[in-house]
Amino acid sequence: MSLPLVLLPGMMCDARLFGPQIVAFSGAREVTVGDITGASDIGGLAEDVLKNAPQHFALAGLSMGGIVAMEVIRRAPDRVARLALLDTNPRAELPAVRARRGPQIEAVRAGHLARIMRDELKPNYIADTPDRAAILDLCMAMALDLGPEVFERQSIALRDRPDQQDTLRGVSVSALILCGREDRLCPVERHELMHALIPGSDLVIVEGAGHMPTLERPEETTAALARWLAD
Image: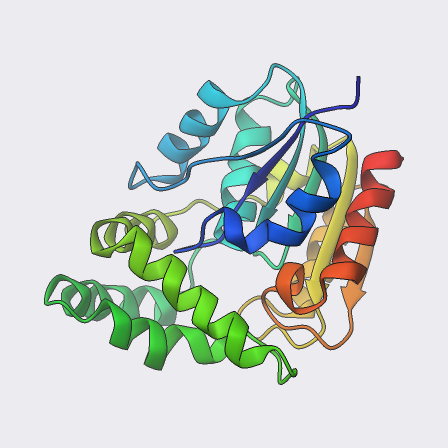
């Protein structure tokens, strides 16, 4: 039986972020998408994932999902058999980013989730590709479906997250580090850092993709994940 795969989506995203990968992998293995919407701290979100995950599994997280994935393997290294970190960041939140969280939360509380997603977050997500408009529309749909309370909880969890560089130094399982070449939220240098921290990890840079290569370049991203799962 193939190793189960647990996928963790980014902030204000759901299973649709991994639509092409779910189609590609679910025929050969159990594929589940972890829920990282219920707690306002990274530790609580990691515990939610572990409560619902198989006993042993491959774990792939994108953006905030990658941040939660690092906490999952920190807490339960014996349960995570493979680790993939996509378009994410092992460091604690920078002060400049922390300073923006409060005003964003207040705006969303006042009913402006769509505006915050449209004006402050979405422009940073996607490379200039033919599918950009459709992917941005999907991002908005996912965010509006999750709603303002999830935005607030996830914002607080990201704001207060711990640095995970020491965690990555201790990772000993097969690890994939992947990002879009044009990712402005979590740039290539962050992934080069994670690659250096995890002994024996593979680094894949997806050309022509930004923060969401699972949707922007699904074939290339799925192929990299397939190689990781087959190692």
